[in-house]
Amino acid sequence: MREIETSTSLRQAVRALEDINPLEWQDAIDLLSRQCHAQSFVAGWWFAGVPRNLGELIALIHSEVSEALEGARKDKMDEHLPEFTSLEVELADTLVRIFDLAGAGNLRLGQAFAQKMAYNATRPDHRLENRARPGGKQF
Image (cartoon, rainbow, N blue to C red; front, side):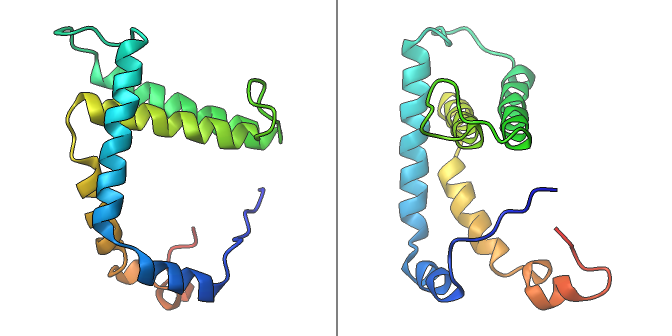
């Protein structure tokens, strides 16, 4: 399996955590959700008063993740944006689909994300010493 190494030192990671303001994440994610949905609406993917199938929208998110996996598996550059890997572009497509869905549904994605990050910071199963124990999460 292909491994991903972090480009961030422990010191940089700790400093980044200290600088994080969850409200900024919330605002940025909510803005991206509105922007992605507006662009998708203008492009004709949504019609006023016509609902879309939630299962289909989630499947489209899943398909972008699968395309990211395939791009990484084949170590490909993207065909449309050749300065980026297929992995980078397909993950960006995944975000666009997620933000579009959140914008369309007026989902509180920014707030949920900020609170989930805060919760994850307190989870015992997210601590290195607990993952290193027998039966701990390996990945």
